[in-house]
Each structure stands twice: as structure tokens, then as C-alpha cells.
Length: 260
Image (cartoon, rainbow, N blue to C red; front, side, top):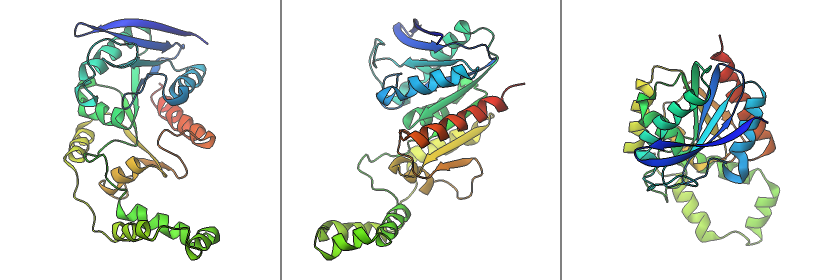
């Protein structure tokens, strides 16, 4: 493994980055979501970065200001434009043979990549983009109906209902949510849609089937978009072994497509 850690500047603060070097001319800028460290949940991003680099594509990860090993105040994904630009510049310095860079992010990192669209990346991989303004928002009615349909096909769930092991109050609220009309599109979803529409580079949308964030994004997105790929049984961070393999293959396909 050819992995190195480095520090670089961003508006008077010092950011920490990790480079998984490789010989390829196409690289991956991996952006962490939420307040997550550049290693990812349970080192998931570090693991996939090593695997991608072993396939010949260099990968750069970093902690934005106020997160992990980076100094400064954490302003959230909306204020991360300078951090993204600084990381992109450092990536090019550290790997001068890289001519094309693909941006990858999960959750609000995906949204940050399109909200700060002046980065001029060569392609974007957006997984489960964050479009939620109410953190307590339920999944969309279509997702709730699908979940109840699955339960009704499961004999064990029917038995739980008949034996009183299911909360009738919770069931009542669930039914109300399932028959509710679609929610209006959030202003953040509109911003993300505008950013994607303005992007001149190819955009790839990856959605985890069991993730509320992905379900809400898809409920607010035009149906039938061919850029969407779904991993039906995946959780938000694609933590399952099959989901990890699926995510890796999706990223590698995009990187190969950028190779001359």
C-alpha cells in the first residue's frame, strides 16, 4: 500500500489529507459526509480507497475544517466549498500525472459537490444525496407502503400482528404516513437539482435501497432518470459486504470511463 498523510492550507487553517497513490492518470477525490472523518464509518472509506488505488487509480481523502485532524470551525457541508477546492488543488500537486479527477461523496458530501459546482471535476458520483431540511422527516409514502407490503408477505410478521406483538399505535401512524400525499420538494432538493442540471460533467446517482435519505431523494427526483443505479439491500453507507462490492464496481466503472 502506497499511503501517505499530509497537511495543506485552507483560508488560514490547516487541513489533513490522505493520499493513496497510484500510477493512473485518473484520480478519485473522496469527500466525507456529515461530520465523518476521512477514514469513513468503521474505516469504510479508507478500505475502499486502498482497493481503488490497487486498481491503478489514486485516491485523495481529507477532513474539512473543524473535523477530525483539521483545524478551524466546522461550518457544515454548505460552507465546504473552499475545503473542496483546497483538497482538489493539493491532490493535483501530490499526483501531478493525474489529468482527470472524479468527485465522490455520500449524503451531504454528495450535495456539497453539486452545490459548489465551480470545482470543474470531470465526473461526479453522488450516493444518497442529502435533500432533507427536516431531520425528523419520515421516508416518502411510497417507501412506507413498500415496507408494509413486504411485512404482509412475511408469515412471521403476520404472526407478530395476530399475537399482539405489534404496537397498534405505531401501526396506525404508519398507515397514516403510507396514505399521505407526496411532500412538496424541499428547497435543498431544488438547489441540488439545479446544481446537477448546471453540471457539464457526467453525473452518476447511486441509491441504497434501505436508506431513508436515498428514498427521500428519489421521491423528489424525476422518475426514470437513467443516471440512477440502485443497490436494493444496501444501507446508507453501503456497509454490507455485497453492497461494498457493488459500490466499488460502480466507482471503478466511472473511473475507467474517464481513462483515455
